[in-house]
Length: 178
Image 1 (spheres, rainbow, N blue to C red):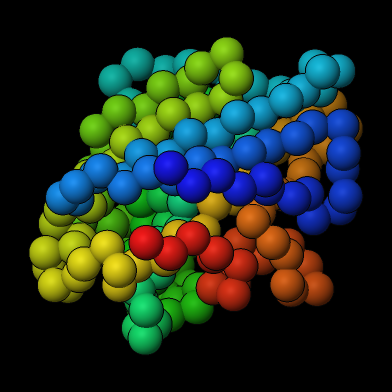
Image 2 (cartoon, helix red, strand yellow):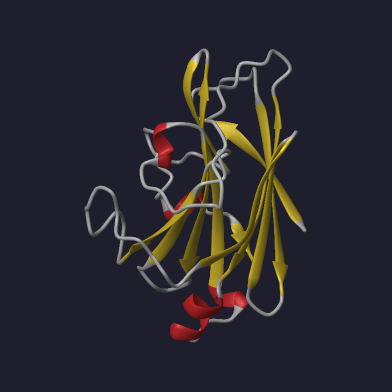
């Protein structure tokens, strides 16, 4: 399991966030987010039942996984709410198509999504995505990010921020390789 300390774009240091990635063969990806909020600044959405797919999760607290393919433009974005709603999106290239909400990706499925006392745990099934594109784990790279809604405003966390504004779609910031 690899772990990464996610950095706030605006250097908001009141909350720290760590993301961990684990490949489970043959096609399962497990990700955990550990959030430290000693001043209780987080605003958490209300939980929902049955893990529905919902759009616009990024408008509140939302944890995100980006899955890129080496030497390819297409990628997937997975949004995970502490409410336990989720959604996956497909892009052909950087933020394209420009639909809002983006086009849902049904080649990624949810195995498990659980809000914990320290953050979130998720297990996603990449079987259809990986088989459809004939991918191996070594073809993939992953970016972890989060939008945190707090009593002090919205804060944007990622593995790194190489753009002049917070931009989770920047593939240079997706640091995990298998």
